[in-house]
Every structure is written in C-alpha cells, then in structure tokens.
Length: 266
Length: 275
Ligand SMILES: Nc1ncnc2c1ncn2[C@@H]1O[C@H](COP(=O)(O)OP(=O)(O)OP(=O)(O)O)[C@@H](O)[C@H]1O
Ligand SMILES: [Mg+2]
Image (cartoon, rainbow over all chains, first blue to last red; front, side, top):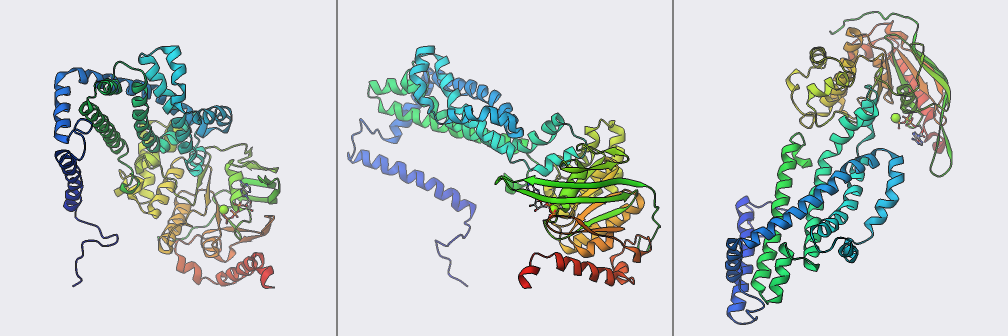
C-alpha cells in the first residue's frame, strides 16, 4: 500500500481534520499574542492580550449602552440597505430586460459607480448634519449603484431561449417578466444582495468614525480618545461577528428560497 | 406500437411561407443574407423537416415562423392569417434545455395553460394527460435539476403540446441527446404524430433523423439559404412507422439517404478547399 503522507495534492481530508485545523490556527494565533504580551515584547497598553479584550467585551455588553450602539448600527444598515434594494431590484430588472431602459439609466448609474461614496461625506454632513440621515444616505449611495449594475447583469444573463419559450406559449411582456425573468435571475440577485450587504458594513464604519455620537464606530472613536485599546478591539470583534452572522443568515435564506437548485449551483 | 401504421391525410396548406428573405445587419456594418426567397407549404398533420448544412438558415426560417424574427421580405401565413409576432399557436422547442428550473415537472407542463388563463381543473387534467404521454408520471413533482437531458426535452414537448398549438416548431430538439436517447425520442415523436396528429416543422442537420421522421424534407443550400430540393419520403408510402429499423430496411431508404448525402457534400464548406 502507498505511504499516507501528510500533504498530498488535491487529496480530500476528513471533515474532522478540517475542523481541527481551523480551530488550531486560531488557538495558535491567540496563544502567540498572549505570549508576546506576557514576555513584554509589545506594550500591553497598546496591545492588550486576548483575555483582557474578551473580558472588556463582556463588560461592555453587560453594561447595556454598547448593546444600544450595536442596535443603532444595525438599524442604519437595515434601513439604508432596504431602501437601496427597493430601488435597485426593480430598476436593475428593467434595465437588464429592456435595452431602452438600460440606454437611459446606464450612463447615470455607471458614472455614479466611479464616484467613491466617502467623498460625499462633507456634502452629506452639510446637508443632513451628523445624525442618522447622513449615515443612511452614505450607506445608500455606497451600495445602490453597484447593486443596480450587478442585478442588471444577472438579468441580462437570463437565457434568451427561456424568454422565447414563454413567448411561443403565449406569454405577454409582463407575464414573461414575472414568470421567467424574475424567477430565473432571483437566485443570483439574492447572492448580489448578500455581497453588497458586506460592503455596507464597510461604509457603516467609515460613516460612524467620521462624525457620530452613536453606533459601533462612535464607540471606537470615543475609546481612542481615552486610549481604551481593549474597547476598540472588542468593537472590531463585534463588527466582524455581525458581518459573519448576516452573511450566514443570507446564505440560509438562499438555501431555503431556492431548494430546487442543484447542489452544485448553490 | 411496433409496426403500427396509418395513412396521412392531404388537406390544404396549414402553414404557407412565400418568397421569404431575411438579412441581418452585423455590428461591423455588413449585411448577411441568411435566407433568400424561400417558399414552401406545410399541410395539416404533416411533419416537414428543414435539412441542410450548418449556417444555411434553417433556424432563421423556423424563427420567422415562430414570429421571433421578422422577415426582410415575403410573407408567412398560418391558417390563412399573417404571422406578425410570437404567439401561443406556434409552440417552439429548442435544442438547449428550456425547462423552468424553479417549477416542478407538473408546473412546467401547466405553465402555458396558466399564461392563457385555462381554469385550474382543466389545466391539471390536461397536464396529467401529456405527462403520461411523455412517460414522466413518476417525476411529476421533481424539479428539472433532478432530470436527465432526455427527460427535460420530454418536459418541453409535453409543455408545448399541452398548450395545444396549431403548429409545433422544433429546432434540433434531439441534437443535444446521446444516440440511444435520441432514438427513443424520435420514436416517441412518431407515436405523438399518430395519436395527436399535430402539424410539425422541424429543423435538423441529421440526415437519418430527417428521413426517419419526415413526410417531407426541404433541403437548403448554404449562403445564401435557399430551398434546393423539396423531397417527399415517398418510399414510406405515406405511412408513419414508429420503428427505426423497419424504416431503414425499406426499399428506397438507401437511395434517398445517398442522394441527400451527395447534396450535403456539395454544400459542404470544405468542398472548395478540397477541389
Ligand atoms: N441574429 C443574427 N445576427 C446576425 N447574423 C445572424 C443572426 N442569426 C443568424 N445569423 C446568420 O445567418 C445565417 C443562418 O443562420 P442560422 O442560425 O439560421 O443557420 P442554421 O442553419 O440554423 O445553422 P446551424 O445548423 O448551425 O444551427 C448564418 O450565417 C448566421 O451567422
Ligand atoms: Mg440552427
């Protein structure tokens, strides 16, 4: 029998090994960090060890005020993302379906895509002040244009034969839109939403760091002023975990909505 | 059904294509004459095959009948009515699979009837009938991702027939299937020709398929596409034989096949190079 070596090209490994290795990398990472601080290789003030960060995170959550800030951040993400989808989904579908609609909107949409959303922060601050509206507006323009374009492309990719099949079965334009184009593009539209929601989190942090009194980003900026590095790190962990959570929820929704898809297409 | 035969009635023209031409404007500014001055009729319950080398304009003719493409010149009539756009009276089956992934087999077959407002009870009954006809009873509630290529084409055939079209249009419907499945599907089509008596216009580049299935073969030339010969498969003496070996064994089969092969070779783009 052939010798079992530890590393083999493209050889699948047992599921338990995958999990064990995945856990191991984190354990080693945190152990090294702890060790580095304990040996005073780094200054504990600027680089508190993991157990301190976890302790701080627990205290912050138990204190309640941080939970409110997390809630505010999630609210901003949700509202801005819902508004963006409300416009991008129907517009993207129409632009992907009809050349005339594309020819009209696309010059505007693609121009906006090249304008970095954060460059509008000074303007938005002047117009809306430092409140929720300004944050939501930034998140909205940060996501909207890309979402429209991606949805349009997915709709364009719907095979012509599917549309023509419906035409030769007597489908009207509206019926075809509703019964062929939308269901055919929907799995990819949901994937596009999932990806853009992740982008939304990036803009949220930018918006809240620049000028805010509430939200996770504001908590971090306040902590910086008092050199509470542990609080900054705890906040970063929360942002990461929330991003992961929402991504997971979207994946789950996708799986539930599109059970008919082949396992390979998921 | 082996050996079952029936004679074919000759009534007036169901589909009438007269002096139809089609040119395409390409993005480079050139004009391609895809089809030039094509005329032919298809009679009720006739299975007519458009045969010819690749790129000769077969699909273009079929798409004009479907109303998916507009003729540059000439006119197309179905049941005495000018064809002006796509409609449910001309159901089309494509070479690529067109089953709707998000609908079950049953829902796929009911799809056209749903578009046209057929009441639920009738829709269900008709779908059941056609699902049985294409032998997919066991897969009624399956989604297309669970079906083989041949089964997906069965779904497409049932879906189109259930919509009760005046003419059935097929563009190389079995072209993507493996040999054995294709053969089974061809025999199924022969059975359908006898039980439902539809009128069929079918595109193929497979000589054997055309001879086995068609009552009439329209052989097209390449660039521009014209009809070179209008051949009746007279050696079958007006019968439809849902058994491929039986047809290939008939006297006259070999002659017709040889004749078409010869034309195919003459139209081959490689011919000039070899000469
Ligand atoms: N939409 C189009 N725009 C430009 N040219 C086209 C278009 N559709 C077809 N053609 C051209 O018209 C000619 C006939 O095409 P068609 O698809 O009808 O041929 P075909 O006989 O069906 O070929 P195949 O056996 O390969 O399917 C070809 O030269 C093709 O390039
Ligand atoms: Mg073709």
